[in-house]
Image 1 (cartoon, helix red, strand yellow):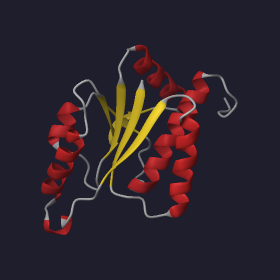
Image 2 (spheres, one colour):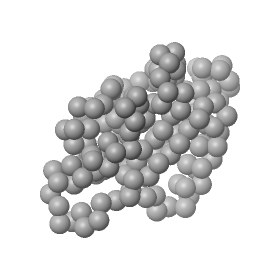
Image 3 (cartoon, rainbow, N blue to C red):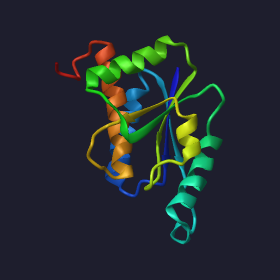
Image 4 (tube, rainbow, N blue to C red):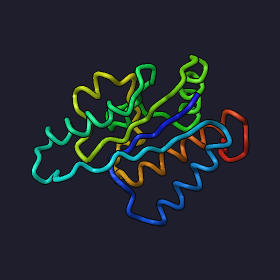
Amino acid sequence: MTIKLLAIGKTDHKELHALIDEYTKRLGFYVKFKLEIIPDIKNSKNLSETQQKLKEGELILGKLKATDVLILLDENGKQFDSVGFSNYLQKHMNSGIKQLVFVIGGPYGFSEDVYKKANGKVSLSKMTFSHQMIRLFVIEQLYRGFTILRNEPYHHR
């Protein structure tokens, strides 16, 4: 199985880039992982929230294959502790899917078309985080999930 993380917009902070690169490298020992950045919508200041979500939604849906399992990172999604999230990953691996795609939307969330295509929603917290920080948190939690599945000492129970 491959895990892909789709995110809207670039990361400006080199410190975040370094941490994202570190956890991406660590995660690569357990699973094929890809981080794909969808560029920010040009002239988004001239668009309504709905128009921006529609344009971002088209870009997101254009990055998916028909067989992908799409999981939205959404504030109204299911919340897990780290062990529960590792079990969630294991269930997807056991199901035989080729690619599990997590998506971090733009500043206004997702279009209705993206919600309709989604196979699930996960929330990392009820708090709001920057889109740049969420990338690091997701990749670190994926890494943590795989270390839990392998009974490695990274996660303390």
